[in-house]
Image (cartoon, helix red, strand yellow):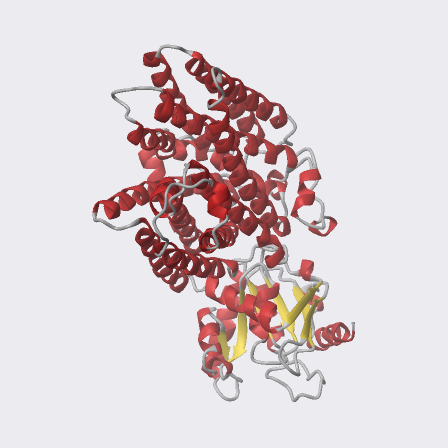
Length: 639
């Protein structure tokens, strides 16, 4: 497999420039942009059509048809398995096609395929011969799974080409919200339309074809998104290519563990979604309306959490939200067990009677909140995979993620079935899932401490200090850079991390790393300990080499050139000369490293004060003398 170099211009849509994120007040403004709106409605229509078709077919088999070889109890399982099977078989090939060919062209081909599948499905729906009807619709279920398999890598590989880093979290949140709203509306429409007296299947057939045509029409307006690896040679062996893609993703530990985290979220969600009908009937004593109500509450929660990500992340890819989401998922899954286990026996009730009983409000609140936190958990990880994956094989990594998602969902179904056979009640399964979620999250966060560090920085900058950042667009989105800042307190490094969408490696006085708790967090962040050359020459030289390696790796290096925390007199201390040594080493390595001045203000005083970080325009390394840098920081302090 050959991976050709890609210039930055290859990664931009051809038809429309990407404006600065500051031009848009929020993520909803993207719906007025051609680079996003047609794509959003294309994926929305596809998700709605998938679920309208599947749910209508499931209802037909369950209530309207009599098929000896497909009993109602197995219908949902068979339809779900047929839909997921293509993800396992064809995701690897789909990822290669997405990297090799222009993405908008692939989207339009996939939507053409959807029209053809829905035309065949229409024949199945209107047929009066059950021996024709059911096999045709089962075949179309498999083909719609193939349609979704082909669209998945394109969907997530298109976004980072069309959106800026500051729009990526909001864009992913909109897509996640749209997907779950489409799933909800598709299920509701499928159930209502198939029940139309005397004409239900025919109405469903017309609706499926109409949605497919609408999706293809709007896809025509998606701007071009050029291929990222047009020279790629396709490997048609799905097993070998799947293994190669997983190894490719495994090479980047943050990306691979984010894939595992997303797959776990689908495992977690599948447990709840698959148990809603039984939970509604056996535990909550509700009818089909209550089961639908639970789906509505769950979908609204996911959509709300997905949309909140942009607000809470200050329009950056903020993985500090992931631990927050994991905590909420466990807390409310466990509370759902306690909320549901003591409900009194009752005859089956409808939605209005169910809502009218206060004992059920806690159940609905738990479902809404655990799904909201699932949205906070998943969206940043999707954005992180898109941001940190190499563009030339981003779609293949996303395809590998889809394979893992499918495998985890299958394991989820098997495990839930095994627990039920072992006489676990449904609330006990929810309790088990909540506890397992806590254990899995703890493992992931220990293996990838960046999540915990960003979470600590998020709490510090949102809950303790009212933290404001000005000029953060000057922090380089990619490539090496040196950040220099005045030193105010021990928590300065965490505040810099909160302001940057990228990891920062801080050069710190080794005494700070001995501070309880904070020192542990900073060591997890791979802070570079440094000592004065006169006190410890070996430690000084080791710190310079470690700093040089950070820049060679294309990362951000933060330095506090005052050499220590100054007296609380508000005066900026002279800058030490170590910065020049670091820049000289970078020049010898052939690196052009910009220097970005920063200034922290209002950190002294009580907690909950208004802290501001002002970021200035970068300087070329040749202009970054200590006195010049000190003057720049001093000017920022007065700004």
